[in-house]
Image (cartoon, rainbow, N blue to C red; front, top):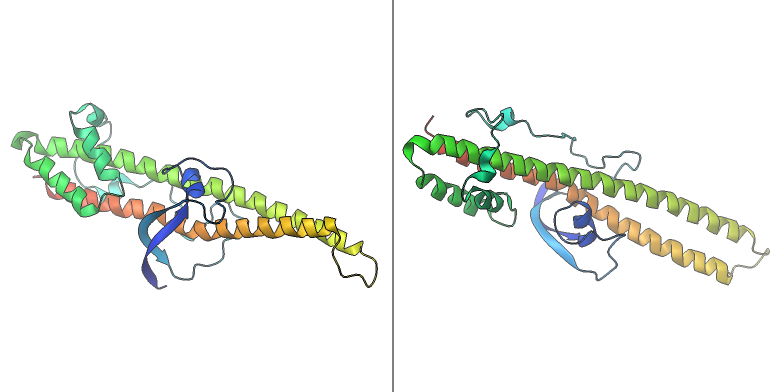
Length: 234
């Protein structure tokens, strides 16, 4: 399938659900509401979202990135002291922040490595990788959890739309034969249904974009891992 580079525009309501940034807003963003942009790629013409599933993405759900799949350096099992290392927490926060270009993050790693004593270089870079992996794996899990919560709210909205549609049908059946004009009650029901349907569709359109976020986090993690590993001597 063709992939095209694109700037994603995602309502803050969805970003809140994904625990990325911004306030957690209830409901969908109304037309004209504040939005934020993220950079990445989107699949052209995404397939319809299966509303029967809890995971709405075409991407296969993998809960956790395996350390062994991206790292062939020293084991990081039990390596937890990165947050106590002077300056390392700040560096890690910079590296995992997606608004920072990968090239700038790689330069920061290079600068960090250049300032390390030769006999401590591999140890400190391993510690740096442990912190980056821990933070970015946590980011990814949070995003995936948010996507599932968002899908659940959409399933609830779909059920409500079905109820509203049934209620409209019942009101239509009560109109006298030959009368096509809506009663005030029916007109009000149609207006509420149309607005709810519009919100639902707008929210649906953001799901494929959100589904790209775990992939983008993985790609950044792989890039940073290559840089860190490449600066090690063993």
